Length: 347
Image 1 (cartoon, rainbow, N blue to C red):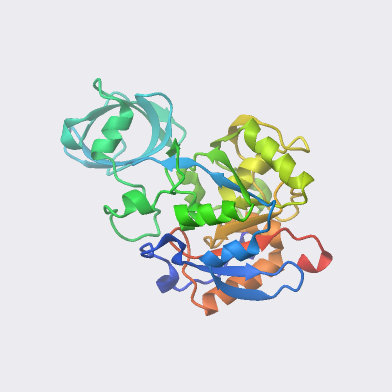
Image 2: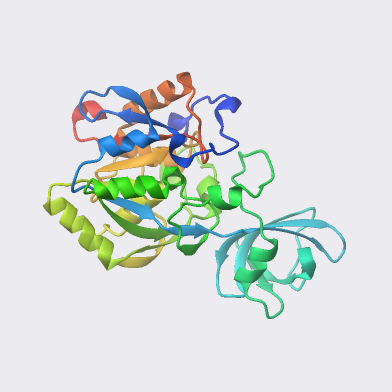
């Protein structure tokens, strides 16, 4: 398939710029597995769609305040977006400035902090933070939440909690696993009370999740790498759910990619490392049966993944319906519940 096969027109006013007052107040579009009927629900209705013995798999990554502001010693303004933490004091980062600083340059950050440019790794800058304070403490002091590029405003105090899931544990992401943003503690309690198990994976979402696909031929696209981990406890929970006849429900594309990356040998295995798994229509899913996901950017790798999972033509109809029904799109937007395509009519 081609990149242009995944283009759609989206009115700007449907791009959610703010979170709703309540996490679970979002809308939920439900695509029926058998009839192809589209139903408009509330996110709280997810409880009705889940069955006893199902397994929810959540991504417990934690978004770090990865956007920093400062200036070069020459005075030019600099904006830094961390991409990956290499050690406590060293990172790979994107840097925006009028002229790219060279190796050896010192960047003056807010509150008197400094970082040294060690060099370049492809299009990223290798930076070393100066001083004895731990990187986490520096980010806590002067870092800003790295809101996506389509949110046209500066971050604020609300984003510190709302651009973070309530189950975030493992620090390292520079973008939120947005399907998880809809869950609050009360809803998770109700889900477990119904007999649905919950397990976790970790995938540190990188800024590459927003990188556009630049080639028309999808086979030529080079997928960005992200660190992920699937623990043995989650592998065992998946096996138990399947043995009981339950479904494995991935909450978000990041949980999906983690589980499928750990299933590359044909079955799910505990593992950790980098994944560059690029899922497009034709991919054979090995572990996940259903998923909750937000609405994704046109021509994005995430839209391609969802189309592979539920069926290309089905997702085209879902998005047309969502636009007509004025669903809220992208990170702070609404969600949908879909199941894996199994039958020829789903293609």
